[in-house]
Length: 322
Image 1 (cartoon, rainbow, N blue to C red):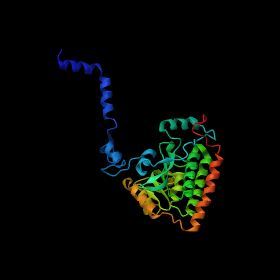
Image 2: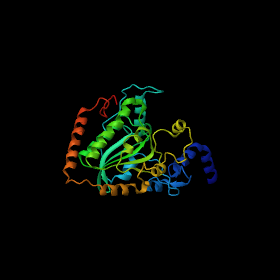
Image 3: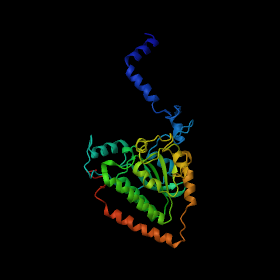
Image 4: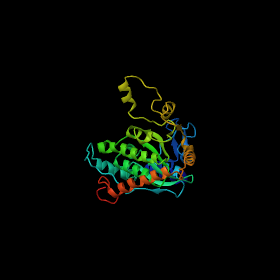
């Protein structure tokens, strides 16, 4: 038998294994741009923070990568990871809310749709919250509201700027009114933060909609947005049916909102960290003013009182009911 015949027989004997091997080698090496269709080397695309080098399209990224992009190495200190969601309404659709939570937690390795913590951003201390669209569309439930409220209160108590990267479909319907309550709770914490003359910057990524847009996403001292991000309250079709007229093609985009004064600046992802660092340096708190210090001290008490209560909606991570 010739060497050629040996290779030919080997190829015929295991066509499936060879096909699988070729697919495994190719998978993950290249990423196709959703906007222009250009293939980019995945490693180069990640080095460019998931921004297409050809057309500038911003691919969707999630909380871990966002934290990696914004926070200095070895400076991230996560907060409130023990808080876990519950099912107070016993909500049922095609499957129970409890089952959906368990499946999503297993898939994403997250407790809920936001990660919060403290860290250094280009050497500047910051309190950072990052929403994650993978977790039930980044919907805002009781845990998201609680974690963001605690983050803001911690930032006020420690006199830190607060940055929240928004990515959400809105309030979580499976928690009903308990979800809508988070809008007021987070807004109240932001008002105490503002009274202490401290900086709050929301970063609106794709998409930012619903109750998140109607609350903390639009309450920033300076509101930043990523290019072409979808930002709005009700959906486009709902607005068109209500107004009974055709809306502009760029309606509810970051560029449309910038033109109409709802957003202060559109910042490409590759420049976001440097812009945030510059804003934080420009708005460092002035500690010599007595009203500022008293306002910050007043914000410590709500933080201590709320953390001591430990509401029944939340349980430690190691609980069997989580």
